Image (cartoon, rainbow, N blue to C red; front, side, top):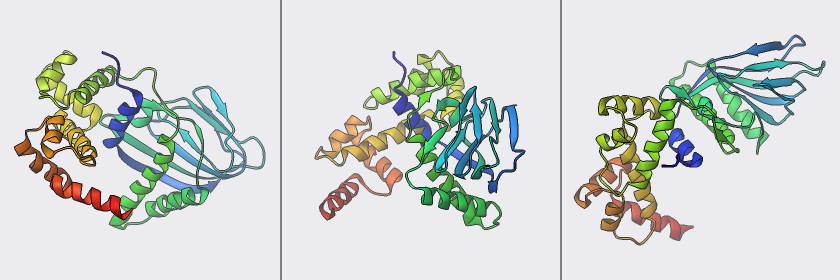
Length: 278
């Protein structure tokens, strides 16, 4: 069985991502800004406002320009330094973006230097992170996470590739995820999925949760509801949609309402109304 296509693999990972900002600030670096060959368990994200400098990630050298985001992923060998007296003025933050027991940027590689579509929006999101770090308000916790997710949205829209050496469990889960996507219309059991990767069912459940951040059944049901929402935009009958996502029709409406807050027919009516309004 072939490996799960990278796009679908990343899409599934992003559904379960948990982000956390460790620290952030706005800074003009000094002439002594320099560090060589270090490795951290967190990621660094810069937004260069002005100035010049040198960044190195896993042996590749970059000279970021004003208006670019700079991503320095965790568990890579990194260096940075000034190149002249025109030093960087930059927003920066240290963060994690975890799915299960791994960080997103361990699993996928993105460009280090990224041009942004709107400098003003990027500065607003960084400023909300920086100001939120020093605030004690409960709402700022969510605002910080939301602002970081906006910034990471720019990153993940770039070209990307899976890392050359994902963990064995991640590789195996890729085969499981592909099987699930190809068999949503069928009855899928934990035992079947565990057999695919030659795991005991109990160990498989723990391993799946560590990689995806949810149980196999939660994951399967979420994919089924996502597919059902898409299919409700068509004129297919509710019964045929329930069959296509592998759910008995008498259970489908209940599951759909629990997942969305609307029955399938109510959801379809909203889609039709939005279409006519547009």
